[in-house]
Length: 211
Image (tube, rainbow, N blue to C red; front, top):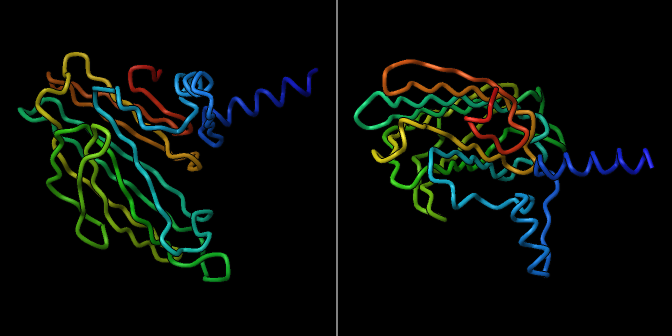
């Protein structure tokens, strides 16, 4: 019985971390999976600030194993139009090319609230593309990280002016299969006060629920 409970705990943790995702043909079962957020879907109902970043390996073999990511997000609500800065840092820890790894190349896409406007990108290999999907805006760039180097890609953009400021909240959704990414979020409130929280992104995370 103890072993079964331990196995249950492992599976439950993997579901919350999105390392396991479920899909059923049975609509009743699938509705329960969706309600528990175990289907890996994008949250279409969330109406406050939002981040969901996705990396797509482009012919880089198994280099993801050696790539460590970290994220720094700052949102300034004190301006007439809320301004956001997202910095994504990639550290390629492999030192030499072999059958398993080489320079890391990824198409990075970040989903943000609908109505956001991208003003500047630095560190990308090519100019950004952008569009709309499931009531979200997305920005996408090609990122190239050579072996044994570090690369930071920074997005500067504005949020829609109707974003809630008095009761600001943020949801960050985690990409399935990408774990242990350090995240630092800094919120500059309407009155200029600043609050910073740091955590490790291993599951979908909501700002207001962080300690």
